[in-house]
Image (tube, rainbow, N blue to C red):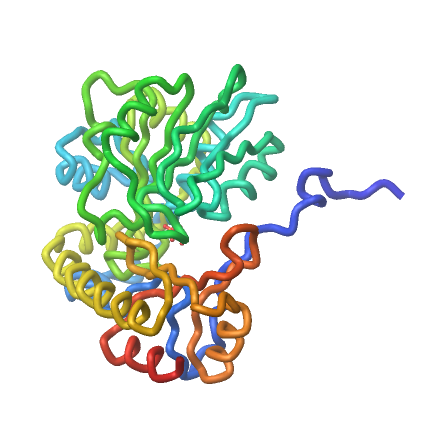
Length: 347
Ligand SMILES: Cc1ncc(COP(=O)(O)O)c(C=O)c1O
């Protein structure tokens, strides 16, 4: 019998998110790069101030107020800003808008495992460019067939490594397609490529951000991107009519009005990242120079799968990817000092 499912969807397993323990379970949760600190008190206030009766109206389909704030933060205008239901929606729309029929998307490997899934959903080819042996930058060489869209995760996930700004700039300026620089973890790093996205002569660089990590709002679902007006306009055409609900728009604006809060939490996480990496290295682990809110670490024995399971049995959740090149590594989200101590004690 003919399957009722489109071939490209039937063929894929879909994206596998990190495990979320059932509500009420007490675990040390260092597996999905959530922020261990609460969001800004301005967010709690904005939530308390929402009049339930106002929800009978549809939300602003253009998310105007929050896009204006984002434009102000990055020194650009709202026409250069798209806001989405998590940066995952931004990435999905980029795949929908910037890859032509029969075209392809590409990325380094290893990287964020959602990109190949999005490409399969769009039914386009996904081209993988291997990073260097130590996961550092390796200029892609696509020969005669470059992809229409290249996802460049910076800092990268799950390695945490940030690439040299000059290499990224040179690559983007010679790349014939769209470069989407995914800056989900940038607030924990030393630099950003946002100035490539806001440059007046930019025609092909889009930079995406999320409130899920540094702003402690993974449960809210808000992400955005900044790029050339023509590309942003295309994303507006392809989005769901009301992709951002009214509550999310209000709370995202409140969070973006308190950058100090986010920066203070990011600074604490950076300092714990150094402490955690040093403690692991002292035990013989290998750690990449992470610029994100996680460490990527290889146990001395390389038996990451066994350690992952043993930690889980002790109520400490970390992330293990059973994928080529990284199956003997663990990605460990940086938690509070007490959570990091609990991880080290469990090890
Ligand atoms: C590199 C990268 N980009 C994007 C995302 C998605 O973030 P959001 O919660 O905004 O959808 C993640 C989430 O883990 C990520 O690791």
